[in-house]
Image 1: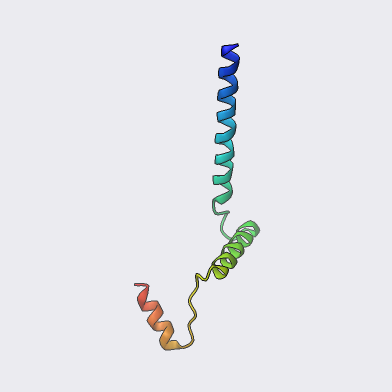
Image 2 (image 1 turned 180 degrees about the vertical axis):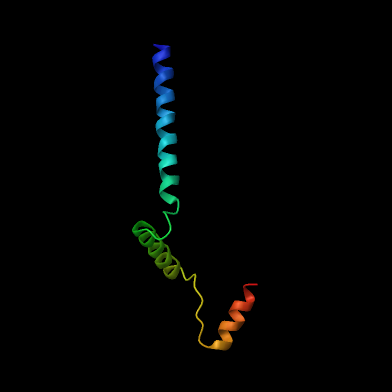
Length: 71
């Protein structure tokens, strides 16, 4: 009976670990340029836009200033 409980405990932990691994795999970047990558990239871009993580550039001068700030 105790061995059976130990096996069930181990199996339960393995199931939880597999769930975590599956989530991490889903978060990985797909192969660049594939249809899956484009869908993934578009979703990330839309999430960034909704969260306000973008920069608006209205002129060449602003663009140069922004690009220089990235150095």
